[in-house]
Length: 238
Image (cartoon, rainbow, N blue to C red; front, side, top):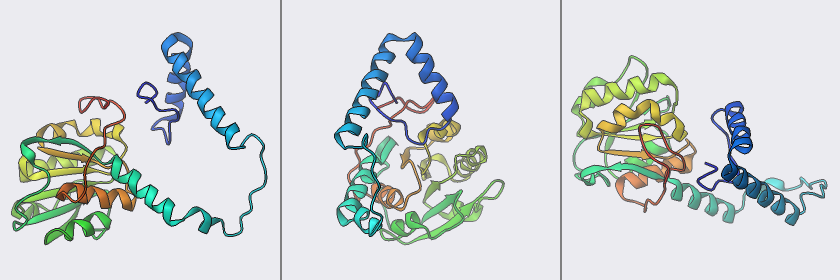
């Protein structure tokens, strides 16, 4: 992420390991040391420019209304939409066509079948919903569907086994995995990703991420996101 241009690492997958690697890079790699120094200077410059160096008490009266403005919401929506990344789109599998055929949305790691992602998908075509867990997938629904959209909300190891089972049951050409997880976890799913024709990465389960991921699948919004890190066996940074 540092070499890709990031100045801050938010919610690192492994804080202790990341810190250790950053310290090692700073001590032993001149180019990395220069990048870290530049990032630190930039962050400190913004802190001083915004007056953060001179700490003062914050007036909490009406704080939520001042933060959650209409402009803030629009900015958040633009950011989530811009982040949506199509990792694969072989044979122009996306956007989904033949909306008259049976479509199934399967949730993995989210017990709520009628979540934002499934709801927005349902606005484009009639479809059925289901959930899947370790050792339990909706086999008949999967076999009867022409397209199986799989929303993955868990980065735990068991989820990879569930996705594999869904792909083996339906056939890889029919399955579209959509990951609402950190990109680092995708290395666990490299078998399924290598088999499926279309794969989408939405990064997290926020309702805006779910909404724009659904739109991206059906052609409701332009997709321009790029993966910010290299994922072993899946994709290179950028």
